[in-house]
Each structure stands twice: as C-alpha cells, then as structure tokens.
Amino acid sequence: RLDAMSEPSIFKRILQGEIPAEIVAETENAFAIRDIAPQAPVHLLVIPKTSHYRNVVELAAGDPDLLTEVIGLANAVAAEHADGDFRLIFNTGEGAGQTVFHVHAHVLAGGLNEKSLG
Ligand code: 5GP
Image (cartoon, rainbow, N blue to C red; front, side):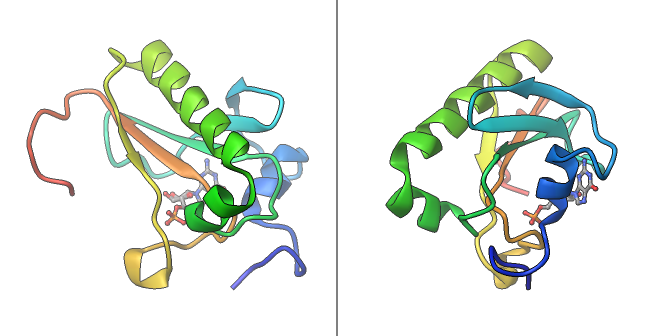
C-alpha cells in the first residue's frame, strides 16, 4: 500500500510528468485524466494534486474545501465530455476495489440509464 510517506503514487507521478497522461481539465488544487481502463463510455478520474489523503473519508475530514473543489471539477468534466449527468464513485479500501491510495473520484457518464451500480 502506498501512502504519503512512501514512494509517490501513480497519480503524483502523472502530475509531475513522469508517466504520460493527458490532463483534460485542471483547477488550482485538482486535475482530471481519462481512466486507462474505462468502464463506461466516459470514465474520468478527478484527483487532488496533493497525495496527502488516501481516501475520500480522510479528504472530507482534513480538507472539505478541497473535496468540494473535486466535486465541482467532476461536474465540469461531465458537462464537457458527456451530457452533464454522471456517477461519482470513490472506492474506499482494498475490499471495495481501491488500488491507488491517493484519493480520486471516478466520474462515469454517457449512456448509463440502467439502475445497477456496477
Ligand atoms: P481505484 O481502483 O483505486 O478506485 O482506481 C484506480 C484507477 O486508476 C483504475 O480505474 C485504473 O484503471 C486507473 N489507473 C491506474 N493506473 C493508471 C495510469 O497509469 N493512467 C491512468 N490514466 N489511469 C490509471
């Protein structure tokens, strides 16, 4: 498990230009990229620039303004890349499928009319 005190997370390395990725949108404290393995017609990740917070619970407790900024950027990229409607998913913990322990929001959009959460 990566954390703030060990090696940089994959998202920090993307932000620093060490791993290629197109940054599709950015605010002062957050950025958005396409997921490398999309699970919906539009699948973006919205990521705080800081790697201080491992998950959304830590982010909400430690910096609620930054969580609000992440949600605002999610809304903006969903409007730009789809019709504006979206699912916002924060996998929290290994048992929930979280693999990168640098908090990030999955923005799923485009043709998601079914009720299932999967
Ligand atoms: P988690 O499973 O932690 O909620 O989500 C991590 C996400 O990061 C996965 O959906 C995975 O496909 C994506 N991902 C992992 N490595 C890379 C990468 O190098 N580039 C991009 N664009 N996405 C990545």
